[in-house]
Amino acid sequence: VSKEGEFVEFGEFLLGECYSKGVAIERNYEKALFYLLRSAGRGLCSAQGAVAFKYQNGLGCERQTGKAIYWFCKASKQG
Image: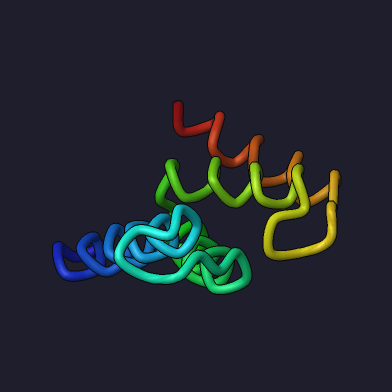
């Protein structure tokens, strides 16, 4: 991944976290999950853990244990 790609994945993660926590913008779990999934798909471990948490708890989506396990496993493989 290029340096620019790293900035994109981290930026998407931060935007997802802002939507998740309602920092500087209105809290919106659906938008949070959208940006976190983009970042997680690019391989950012923190985003993968955050996506797993959202699926586990049904934040921005229906509760989906299988997807939560999938993302927790991907994150754990990275440390």
